[in-house]
Image (cartoon, rainbow, N blue to C red; front, side, top):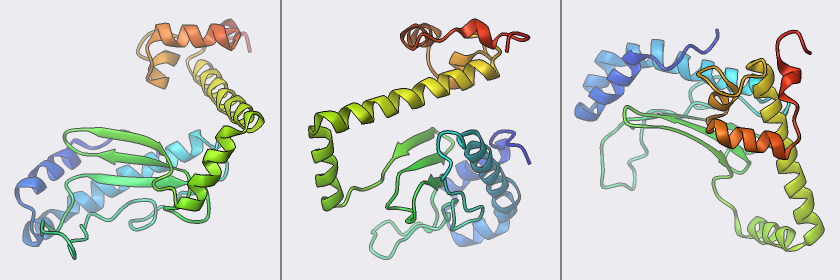
Length: 203
């Protein structure tokens, strides 16, 4: 099923959960979690995995709670805060063998905020040392910069294709990328992209 946005009922559920954070309330209302929140998050993850396939073909999506979708239960074993449930929902897509030891994309929704993040959660010491050495090597740093710029250019070209060459407006490429139109225009000039080629009938 296509992702149609996060349900209003899910936001209301999370908001009320912050006021009634105990098992009895959750079990009495868990249908919202099972029937609205979980499917919406899995649809979002599936849509994002499909959209990023050209850039991240090895991106891992495990479509279940405990897979890509984090459980709502909090780990309270060593915490003074004994509330049993989180008041946000989160998911992770990752590129590698280990879920929390690989680069990934983090999605987080609560009534107060939406977080969309990317990177690696925690660098173990040996990996961090290797990464620093790579960045201090001029040739390696240049290759990394070229790869990052290549990815950015492909994302811009994909957004222009989807927007049929339009930069501004609610359905324009800038809105799709979440950047100001002036910023995107500057990047288009820097990458020497011909946005007219993406106009309908020009491809």
